Length: 216
Image 1 (cartoon, helix red, strand yellow):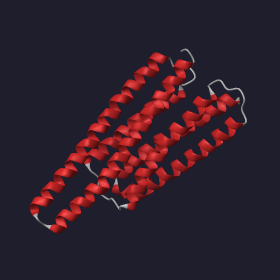
Image 2 (cartoon, rainbow, N blue to C red):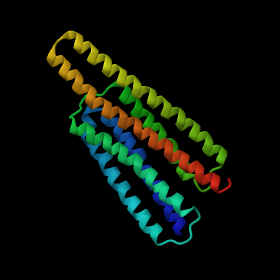
Image 3 (tube, rainbow, N blue to C red):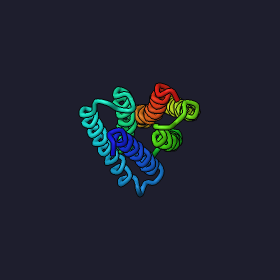
Image 4 (cartoon, rainbow, N blue to C red):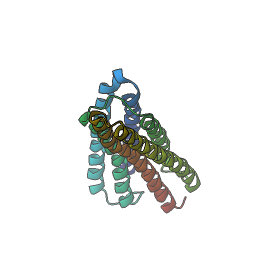
């Protein structure tokens, strides 16, 4: 196997880990009975992704000539790693704050992450022969999904603020304290979820740049 093929295999493994992590992240948010095992799977996939990145950098350091620019290969590994790191961050926050119930907005964003990683998997698999036109079409799809996730994030933030306002009007210190804590926890969590969609979009943009540089 050529070194270019080895880089491609590592890219494909990393995005496969991201797809699987997104699937299990969805289970965390939608299936309480499977949540613990699903969280463990997300964390495991992130560690496996780190190993792919390490192998990629090691291979890159030993390679002088590559089909893709070495700088592009390095950026690809970074963007793929960002996606898995972000999903790991979501799970870490869930565990840190012992979150057991999830907002409708958050469940929808996780569904978007699943769609985006699936689109990216097809994109990564075709990176050696993808046309600029097709790559740009996929970026358009991912941009629309990213915007949808951003709208959901702001919807969640507004709902949290409204909940705090109602708690203030109740003049119940306990109710207010609970509402403020939920606001603190969920503003962090929903932002981390939306950040994951940003990372997915940025990987797609990176791939478009690679394809255009190849003159396709």
